Each structure stands twice: as structure tokens, then as C-alpha cells.
Amino acid sequence: MGRRAMQRPDRNSIESVSPERTVSWRDAMLEAAAAARPLGFESVPIAEALGRVTAHDLSTAHDVPHFASSAMDGWAVAGAGPWSVDDSVTGSLAPGHAVAIVTGALIPEGATAVLRSEHAVLEAAPTRSGASDSPASGCGRLRTSDGAKPGEPFPGQHIRLAGEEARAGEVVIAAGTLVNPAHIALAALAARDEIVVVRQPQVRFVFTGDEVDESGLPRPGRVRDTFGPQLPALLQLLGAKALGSRRARDTLTGTVAALEASIHDAQLVITTGGTGHSSADHLRPALRELGASILFDGVNVRPGGPTLLARAGNGCLVACLPGNPLAAMVGLLVTVVPLVRAWSSRASEDLGEVVVGADIAGAAQAALLVPYSIVDGLGLPSAWRGSAMMRGLADAEGLLEVPSGGLVAGERTRAIRVPWR
Image 1 (cartoon, helix red, strand yellow):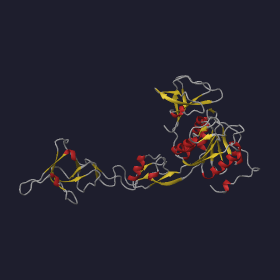
Image 2 (tube, one colour):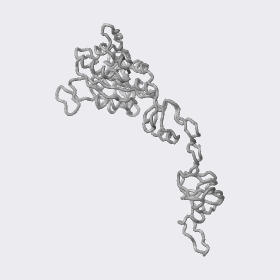
Image 3 (cartoon, one colour):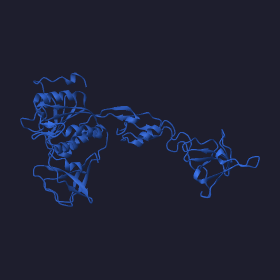
């Protein structure tokens, strides 16, 4: 993003931000996903493609496998047995002959099957003097053992034919696939060194709070930083690229400076704290200072209500999460997760339904999103669901919706599954 895009606009010419508009948590997910603009594609080495989404179909450059090979250790045989064994045989294998072979080795021309070593008996060949050579010499007579099934080895047995997994030019990984370790191995078998994938959204973080300690035991009146060690790793798990973080002073000047320094090279900036309406909350004035437009200001849900989404003048999105840990995670699940999934072309499978196993009281002003676990097939709310608590979410399947009228045991309700389970 160019330097011109980062010039701070004339305050007299700044258009006012969008009027304050709260949305439901479901609409927040839809609007966040719709705000993602295509990022394009890039080619990466196959070793770096894990967790990425393919942008194009990947076809194999040759047959897979590209030669006929043995599926067993044993002997490649030609025709019916018994067979004469001579490891010095070169070229085509004549009928009635066999040669030792190992798993994965090239099937010699003329071979019709592989006799696995467990089902074979190698007998010494007589010498001219009447003595016997040792079978270890590689020469002798080969026959099937008494433990072999009748008819073994039948034609083609234990031979991996060329192209039996895929033919040259065949698509083996479709566009839109989330690459797993098996896909990487398949790409290598297809003789591909790189995979074209959807570009990852680049994310920066702005953490607020002068009362935050980043390590050790916090003193009374101070709190431990939960976001610094948590959010960058979580965003990478979701498929984004974390570029770095800044901590903003609890002043308008400090917040503006941190935001301005963060939006210039990122598609998304995530902030924590400062989303309230007190004199100590500077996020909204900072966004106005930078000429950002607010897409929605607040989600009609508890916890996580003071979550907002804005777009800076250069196109960078700013997802502003509340300062309490659980409230921030609710805001992240309904805003950041669908946004990153849309950018990454990853289908969202986070929404579902759950039957609750207990009565749950609602809140008059807004829907509740409550951490829950599944016990005997039913969703049970966590006892630790305060906006500052992490214990309930740590072991939860996700968040279940409690409407203002509450829920009765046996009722079905909507739920958001956490993306790390």
C-alpha cells in the first residue's frame, strides 16, 4: 500500500464516519465475511503449503506411479513355477525364471507377478559334481511354499502398475482444498515442486492498556497480558500471517500513532480494549482522526457487545475487540474468524445447533453467547462465563446462543464451534 494512501487526511475534509449501528452476532459474521476483498494468489514450495488453500487445480506431471514396481519383498517371476533363480539375469526375464526384488523396485520386463518372500522356498541348485550350492548364493530353484494360497502368485499379483493411482495430466488436488500433509506428499508424487495458493491476509495487532504486565505476577490494580501471547498464534492457526504487534499508550495521540503505523502494510489490524465510551477510551476518536469508516459499531450480544469493525482509507480493515478476555474472544469469533476464513477461501463450518441439557436464564437487553461443553450429547453451559474469565472457554466446544427469554432443557439453539477443536 503506497505512501500516498497513508497520508493523514485534512481534518476539515474528513467525511464523518458511518452513524453508530449495532448488529446481531449472526449479521456481524455475515458482514465481516462480506468485507473481505480478494487477495489474489501466490506460488509456494510444497513444504510451505500446509494449511493453505489451493487457488488452482493441481494435476500430476506424469503417471503415478510412473513405473511398474513391486508391492512386496520377494521375487519377480515370469510365468508359472517352479522358477530358476539367477540374480545375474539382465534384460527381459524369460518364462520360468525369477529374480530377487524389494518393495518399490522396478519390475523387470517380462515379469508377470511377484512372489512374496513369506510364500517362497528357495532350493539349492545341484552342481556338476553332485554337490549343492547354498541358496544364499542367489542361484537355485524357487517354488511356492505350502503356506501359499492355491494359484499364487496369480498374474499381476503384488505389482503396482504404472498410472494406477493417477494418469499424467489428471487433477489430484482440486482448487479450494485446504492442504494437509497427505496433499503435500501427493504433490511430490505428482512431480510438483510448488503449489499455487490463496494469499494469506496479513495482520497486525494494537494492544491498549497502561495497566498491563507482559510477564510475571501482576501487582494489585494491574493485569497480565492475555492477548500478546494468544492472538498472533491464533490468527496463524486460522490461516493468516501475523506481522507483529504494538502497544498503544492510553491517550488519543498514542492510539492514533499505533493505528497509523499498523495499517500501512496489513489487510487487517486487530485492536484490544478502548471500545467503550468513557473518557479513557480513545479508539473511536482515533478512527475518526484517521478518516476510517465504521462498518458496524457494536454487536447486540453479551459478552462482546463493544466490538466494532472499521475500514481505513487505504482499505485496511480494523477489528476492534473489547478489553476483557472472554468478551474479546466472542468478538473475535463473530468478526475476525469469518473475515479471515473469507479472505483465505476457507469454507466456514463454525455454525451449528446444539440441544441444551439444562435451563439457562437469558438477559433482557441482548442475546448471550455462553461457553458450553457436550455431555451425553447435550450442551451444558460453563460455570465460568464472566466477560473476564477464560476458564470456561478453554475447555469448551464453542458458544451457544441464549435468547433474551432464556432456554429450557431439551430446546435446540444455535451455536458457534471454536475453530481450534
